Length: 192
Image (cartoon, rainbow, N blue to C red; front, side, top):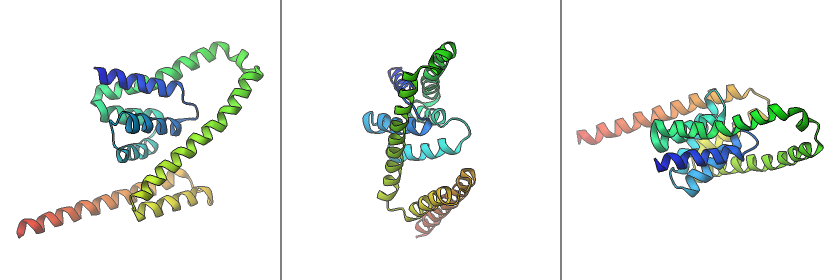
């Protein structure tokens, strides 16, 4: 119960003070659950980030579901979902009633402009952390895929969904080859 409460309060806090979308909250989740609480390994968080990005829906909610389920099963997923969706729900409800006052206020506009710079910095942090993890593993195929995916998006303007689909197929093929290789090795060792 204590873990569920901690999961709820952590995701609530992250969601309440995170601006800039799902990529930002995923980075902060990594810092909270991997670096600070040590509830997960960095490799797991990297995999969950990829799944959250590929699945339909908001990246922050997808990431919360995966992280919550990994940490405390189905109750953990529920705690993480409520912790993630409650702050935006409350904030949007408040903004709904005061929208006219916020829209014309120059101070609010200046705050939002300043927050854009902070969001860009946090997203750059996410990208460098994820890329350095792949490079440290010395997984050359993943590194090449990462560079090609970036070039395809940035230089050639290829649709992100097509890139994700191709990367998913490559991942399935690589994992299937590893499984077949392990099975063959196991059969060979059992015949000796």
